[in-house]
Image (cartoon, rainbow, N blue to C red; front, side, top):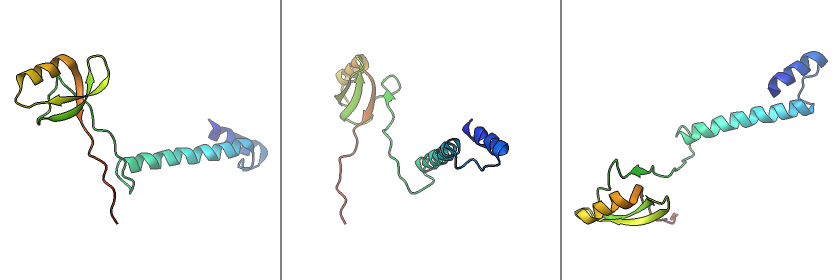
Length: 115
């Protein structure tokens, strides 16, 4: 909409429209939109920026963890908590089916970069 206003203003006045409040805002918004597209491209892995996202939640109804361990869980109340899962335990599986909606692995521990 602002770009159209700048073009109309340019046609009516003979001014390029960039030195008017509308033109300045239009140029800013054009730059903002181009910047947003650049960020989207980088987030998709097409540039140098490495954007890390959270692992997806895995519904308990879909599957349980394959290994014993501690996992982040959304419980039946909607709270995010930590549960222990024991692979070869029927009671552990029953507990998860009864009390958990979805789970995800814990993130890797922080490691300082060495030079």
